[in-house]
Image (cartoon, rainbow, N blue to C red):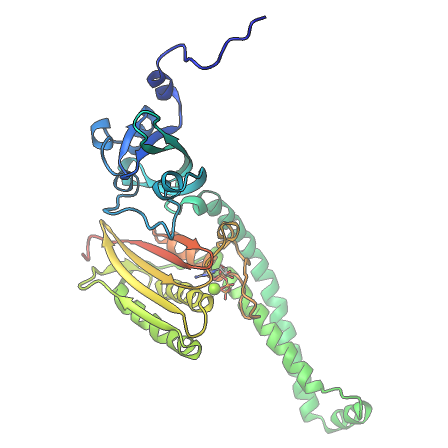
Length: 379
Ligand SMILES: Nc1ncnc2c1ncn2[C@@H]1O[C@H](COP(=O)(O)OP(=O)(O)OP(=O)(O)O)[C@@H](O)[C@H]1O
Ligand SMILES: [Mg+2]
């Protein structure tokens, strides 16, 4: 049987593209959208006239300038300029200006007639979520871990307290009872066995376990109050003061660029401090001694305050970035790192209606964006 050539579409391409249930757009070298199918317009909740000829960063990211290609994958940069095909997950704004997670496949296309180059993007909506690639699975994972953690933390905390009390009692008995002390000293003479050192080590390690269980409880019940009236800039100054000892020790520069007359917000002061310290500390830990710079920046974007914490440190690989909000995920070698700083921060911010985003390039740096809603009563 003669095979038919698959090259010609039986009906108009336009109709076909409009029946697809994923968004499709074509972007030119100047970041302008030159085509959008029906699904894209529906999800962006915009009319064709507002999208065609408009900039992609304005339509999808509500930005006034192109996205920073150092910190996130940009179709114009990677697909048009470098001719690559990329698959990424971004946070895009959809109807009601709500952020949603979108999986994007972007391929290069060159018009043979004019020689002009374009990026053809297919966008699959992964659901609501201001944290783009992190949020959709994460919130569920986190709440499950939180529930589990609460039970485990309670169960472990009681025996730990008993063990700690017993160790302390043994130390007291040894210290106070001359006969036992003498017997033990005689028995261990010349054996290099420093009983006090081992007891101290036991105490130290039990305290560490208790600290972890305390953090686990925080994960399941982040913060109870959002009723403090908080000046974000003052909290950042406070956090910088607390971090300055460590920053000074590493000779890391901490800079700030804080919005004047920043609106007050209704939030948990303790919760915000914890988030700033966790993320600020991570930034200091990620940068190199002497060359490290950590920026704290505040901006008002519509009805949110954005806090940027940016570092020029080691960055996070695309593999690891999916896991940094997982409880106990840690690449830090220090024994004091538990891998709970970020999951706790996310848990707090989510319980208070905010969000955290992260952009990173391995070897170049990381940008965390903490978004906090402004309560109109105070602004
Ligand atoms: N600014 C950053 N630059 C590079 N990597 C980072 C940055 N922030 C977080 N990470 C990575 O994410 C991991 C998880 O961070 P998280 O704060 O949850 O845990 P931790 O810092 O390792 O431990 P803890 O916060 O309990 O001390 C870190 O171990 C690190 O690998
Ligand atoms: Mg940390």
